[in-house]
Image (cartoon, rainbow, N blue to C red; front, top):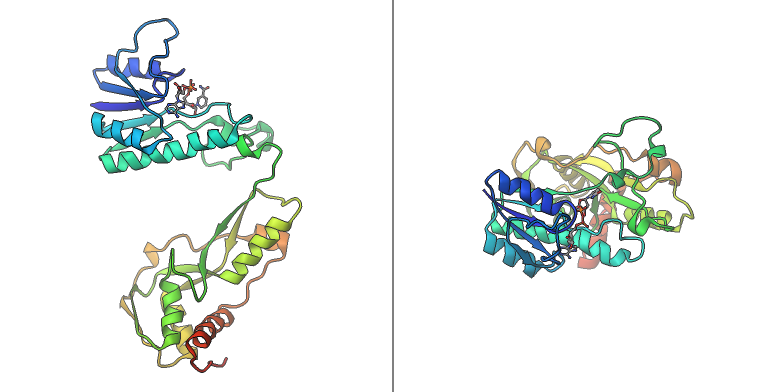
Length: 296
Ligand SMILES: NC(=O)c1ccc[n+]([C@@H]2O[C@H](COP(=O)([O-])OP(=O)(O)OC[C@H]3O[C@@H](n4cnc5c(N)ncnc54)[C@H](O)[C@@H]3O)[C@@H](O)[C@H]2O)c1
């Protein structure tokens, strides 16, 4: 089998390559420093091409040349982030993305990447117990040094002018408001809606908080099927032409049951009811279109 090892001449790479070659695999390495000597001076036993994983062209060219069936990426900046977090982030994040994309385009069937125990952070975060792969991560390296970094996971953000990402829920309201027909594939598809104003408020509160208690917050929102949303729109616009190709879709839905109690408890966030927000979106669109507003 043909295997490409990125980050081939570091600490682990040469040993991995030797093991693969000993098992009869056809291995090619790539590294920024292809001629680095091995610990015991013995040859790696496979060709190592020069290439930089942060340069997509280098990774793509190598994948096209080697045509690997499998690929492993070991080229990261290990323990080097404190002094130069920007460069190491580029290496770790952009480099890995380059590998995924080149592998996808090159038809690679399997990729392995090296993560690190460092993602778990301090043992004290867990007490005196084993940590498994499903446990939360508390990594404190790279940019987390001396800086508070808080993540927010928005649900399906909705509003009158959304054009990227999930937009089926938007079309139901905005096309309905314009008096245009909407036809969508699945009536039962669930969305977890949060109005863009509410989303902006969540970001504002978390950004302005001196010391958020958590590193990550779900925005949460209001779960609704597209069919139910269409019914709410028809409540305001009885003539709205909203049709679906099929009834089902619930099983194809993204995560719509989300615990966002962290956010609601710590920041006192409450979202207005969906009817209120749907009416707002409809009238926002009708105002822009010069159409008469509809009432509650
Ligand atoms: N060794 C450990 O203790 C350990 C622990 C946890 C995780 N890991 C993970 O496994 C990976 C491999 O470990 P290692 O000890 O062999 O690391 P290493 O630092 O010895 O090897 C990394 C290799 O990647 C190469 N490289 C760096 N930047 C590059 C770039 N831009 N393009 C191409 N190549 C580049 C380096 O020249 C080096 O040969 C680590 O980077 C780390 O993410 C290792």
